[in-house]
Image (cartoon, rainbow, N blue to C red; front, side, top):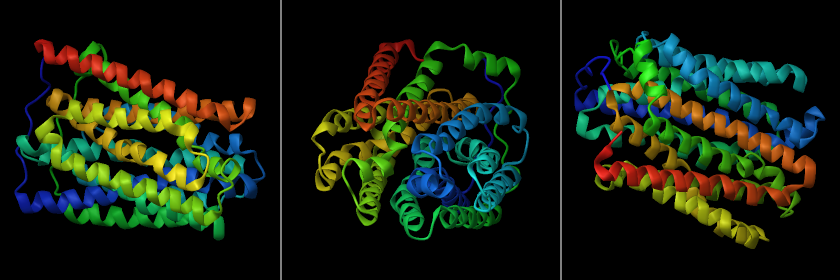
Length: 398
């Protein structure tokens, strides 16, 4: 592959640390905003008087919108200074959530939600690409996985809190909280990310190289498959727990909290070990853990049993995507901007596919069909990941 441009010099350690914490906060806000719909799905459905499968379109259509927006916007906005770009996208995201909280019905909420999500399409991949520039070469994997701890923190605090707020005060308060959090994160990013951070701008030829490279696109496809498996079930956790397990509002929030806490633990462990074990190994371990949970799902017939079955999934959930980001950026660092945008696109495409297939399954036959479908997606992701790891270990590289 012909390189588009050399990478700029890294930041001094103190400046890098300040910027990393701000970008972690930005991902926390993004994660809270993305998860506010699954966490609020019960109240959204009841308040707006639409079936759960229809309310789930906020997830599936939002994921499709993000999947298209991430690579397109990366190409359009690639020349912008990252301080301005990251700050403005977080502000856009926050304002979008505040406006969504004011919408009177589902028909008006949907377009406002989709427009607001464009901030997420830009921020997450571009934050990772900016870290790839600001961090020294030997520390890029750890730096990128560190800022993705924000997503794990969102699952620990944001999703259970959104569920609790929606169940007690209503979904509008949950959306408004996500909006205010995003505006706070935007101010932090503005204060700490320096001017002049500009990852290499990719030419059309470079994009063509990435999009036609079978190994790189195979790595991106792993994200599509694993996200499809996760969101087939994850999108409908709240109604599943309510309808199948007869869980109370407090028990639903506790399950989300348990899931998020072990998701955070998984990402912390990944941050410590990714540069030692290698990103590919970490991805495969995470996929095995999630496959194990889905295989054990039929045993989860009570709230305590569900908490145990969720643990392996939680350990692999957020760490898998963080490791994927590191795997792609280390495999072809000069193309990291395109690859990370495509990986975010793949994650959101999988989210859309999973939420849509889960909604169809619920509409056709209830919740019983969801675990098997999710397991099939995840097994395919694991098989592809192991196959590509074997290919690359054979010296053929990317």
